[in-house]
Length: 597
Ligand code: PEP
Ligand code: MG
Image 1 (spheres, protein in one colour):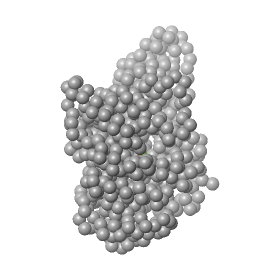
Image 2 (cartoon, helix red, strand yellow; image 1 turned 90 degrees about the vertical axis):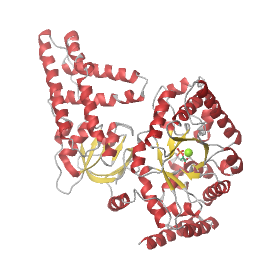
Image 3 (tube, rainbow, N blue to C red; image 1 turned 90 degrees about the horizontal axis):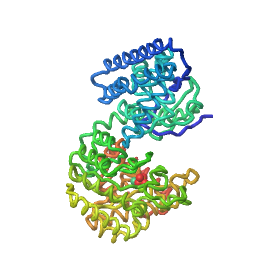
Image 4 (cartoon, protein in one colour; image 1 turned 30 degrees about the vertical axis):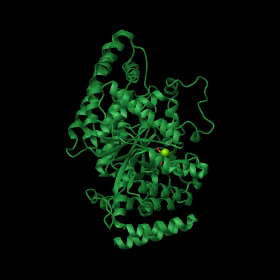
């Protein structure tokens, strides 16, 4: 029977291949005291190991192909800098001399020291670079242990066979080496460590390698030579798939490759329906670095920047300047295209570290787990509960409006008084910036998310106060159908075609149209190809989705006419049976494919 392991999809796509398990990056580090007469010998071992790694990194740097993504060279340069830093190279020699310990022991003490120093710097970039320090130090430890890098055991697999690497962690430099050794046969990789912002993840995306990181238990579940499927789109690996799973994934992989090549041709095309209605296709991003992918996909702007990821996994929250840098970076890189920055949506499944919560003045003894977090202190409720947190973020977003076309989006509004309070906070943030003589665009529009049924049923009051609306279908479904979106036990009830959900979406789009207020959809429904025609027919003109979905949706838009879309929407909105709705959508998709052919 196959086994599935959930991790984090670091890139996109599907890979099928035989597993090769890489030796764990943590080596058995031999630690022993030495005699004074052995000091020179141990120092010489350290010098040799550093020289070996230096030569290895230099060789890799020289072999970087000119057409390789820019990051490839940058990673190697960074690792070379770390290697040459006196903190890593000189200090262990002193430790050998003063403490009379062997080279490995001295180096491992120093690694911990350097990592501690990096982690203490109040900067996420430095904190996350500890992984790079460990990866460089790992290479030196391997050299000390006899020089066989983890990558040395990988040989080019038999012709036609694809290779999936399974490791505890994989340094960017190792990944490059492995790719060079295995050529096009390297299909993807799985690691137990690492997150979506690690260098390894960035490199996987640049090299377009399907990868799942943070797959805890992968090395235990996967044996050498096992057949493994990586589904990077879902952050999933399937170990030992059965014939049906294999056939399904093979088909999906082939379809993806063919479709991607076709879609790339659409990048420069304007998204217009067959009868000439222009549609804006925007990108959802989670980190400033994602803006590049959005631009590469030809996005018309950023429709949703989920800022909470800047606040998570850290003990000290980002201050105004750090936030400003992140928002301004996106605004600048989008070169005047709109950038919708959503205010902090923490709570429910997106929790801040305990230390960060304490720093906000969380009442001592307050329960860390709420009884019903999805209905608890989340998003705007959280921000209103912690005014300084909210004001700091608003000031940072407003400052970024001086370098691009920035819009502020407030999540999870349900009450009119929440809108009024949020707007009052924006006004206060503007005043503070004026007092502090910071530049900002006083007209930066403030919009609200429609993701609670109460909001979709209070549209006149929302439209009076807000400059634009964005429908968060993920939560709108959750709150309309009373299904915790993080609870697997009720996942089968999560239905985006439930008539109640469709009615609320349609009402919101129509009300926006009447009031001449822009309405977008930024939940997952915007990127679902089966729903493009229906949403167009409801009158939607702005779709915001993961960058990888943009060209697919563009293709659907180009194939669809407003007339047929409106007819479909009218039919669907009359239906009370989701099954019939599904059938109507399938019929429409077949008709659209016939028209396109
Ligand atoms: C949504 O709820 O649809 C949405 C876009 O917000 P998130 O997924 O971040 O909750
Ligand atoms: Mg939401």
